[in-house]
Image 1 (cartoon, rainbow, N blue to C red):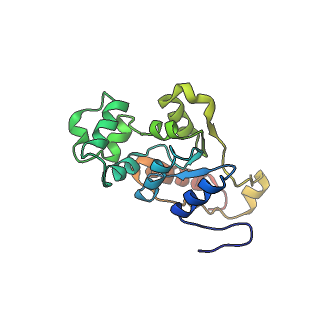
Image 2: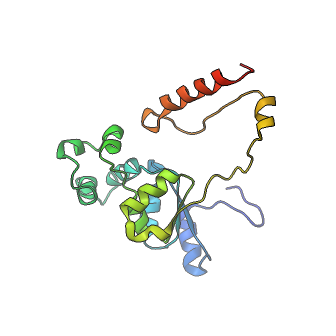
Image 3: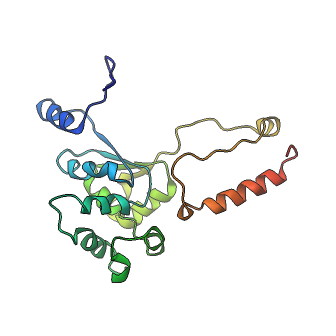
Length: 193
């Protein structure tokens, strides 16, 4: 693994061993909606910390957890039924598709909030979902904004060519068509197109 004198990368087993011997001051878990984050859900109850959540919908994360050894075949369905009693049974067959998760507001952010000391996100939407799912933890759910501080002035906007990019996995439930339409409207309104 890469490391320097002050910063390094270690695997989770090494982290847990070192933390048991000499506890770290703070722990931040970076949680996303993929199978690559499943080990965090099991670690968080044993070593409390802050969850940095990069998205509101975590159904894929919990579906991946359901496939792990030691969990019952109905673990995911039982979790969704507990969190969202109004989701129809037929929606849960074989997991929950993204459009259904969005339609029924089945984000599964609440179970991550339950495991965390605080929740940080760069998305106001994610923070609002979290506060809706766990209203008693509102004070522990914070939208910290984006890390990039540059805000172009009007002069910058008129003098530089318009170049836009989106980074990360995109799909229609994230409003990609709306974003592309908005780009077209902005582009049409510029004098330098």
